[in-house]
Image (cartoon, rainbow, N blue to C red; front, top):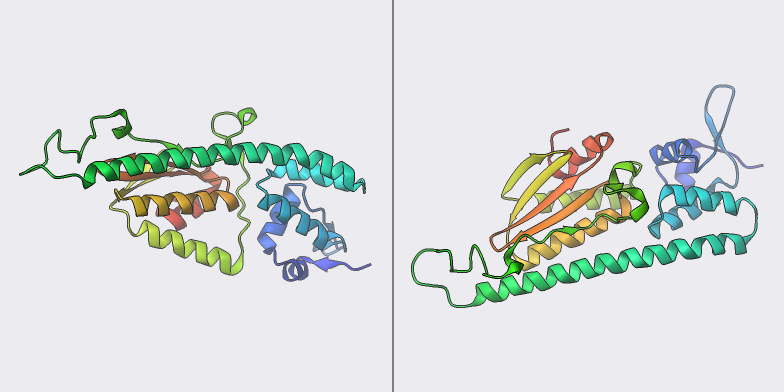
Length: 257
């Protein structure tokens, strides 16, 4: 029977060794031990990891993946499909909700852009010039919460999500560089409870860039909580994370670890 040491499995599967250890601790990937204490994985580990990676790309939570793995161990594909169907339906509902939020945010941006594109008053800014208010409820900050929310997980589900990223290698390096480039455009940085608030100049293109990157980050690191606030003069991004992710928060967003 084929067995793998952790370095061999990492090379074969493309999953970093740190993630393999995390999966074992989370009960997703069992491992035996040699007399010397080294991890040894069975020949089914590669296929099991492929299933885990596929499920994470679908946005399933670790506890859901763990449950699916238990069903999968029974060896009946129909049972796995039957359990996956309601989970995927749930994710479709959540995704549609996030799309609706982003559409509302885009509509608000368009309204602000239209207001600011009109003739500017002579002289300095004033209370009715449009730079500080549009005179409509839409001028108020518009919170767009990008973190996936499930009613049975409380008001802050990101606090209970395991700190693990599904990106690796070149993808992780590219994502880190994207965040550092974007954070470099911030005009101000403020520490907030559990995270940091970044303030950017208001602008449709930049707001779309911030929203798109935050949504992409949610796909691989669900323990991050993102909230966008838009006013006619500023764009703010609040980023929060559990205490165990303080190092990643500092590395990507410049927060105090």
